[in-house]
Image (cartoon, rainbow, N blue to C red; front, side):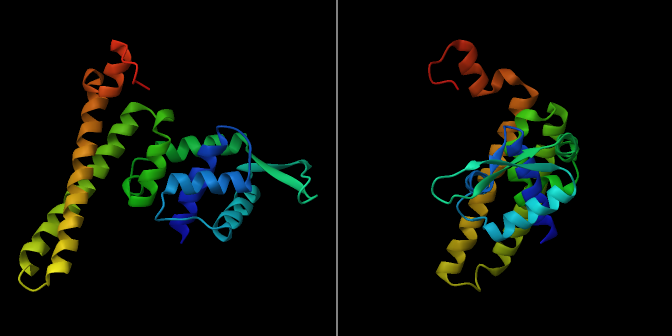
Length: 196
């Protein structure tokens, strides 16, 4: 549970870099970021916000009273300590940086990260997934005769997902090392109207 709280803290700090937000907006943006499979409840968000307030990473201010609830709305903003903590967390390149939950959040804020750090995180994630893929493929070949059709399909699906992510990571790593191969960058340079 501590790891999930750290992931939420990183995401909150990253989102608050964009500007102050109230709890409802933070939760909505976090749920979009975490994806449909990992919905964040208020029961997870507000204890994390309270902990971050105590650590002086964020501060709250009271906005105007809303006509619907007649209660003041609390808005959260990142402090200088929070900015430093976000930079520290984003510069870490150890194993927690490429674990499933943490990698997704870090990737969402890669635009604010040094290229060398991005490369180390992407390479670490790819290595971790390649190890996972090798293990799954070994297990799959050993158990194929023992599992029914549906269990076998589920295993095959898992292998395909990991293979797809390894290819995606390899493409990202190549684009980081050689920006001319990055289709997004190339389109922008060539004046492609679909470039973002």
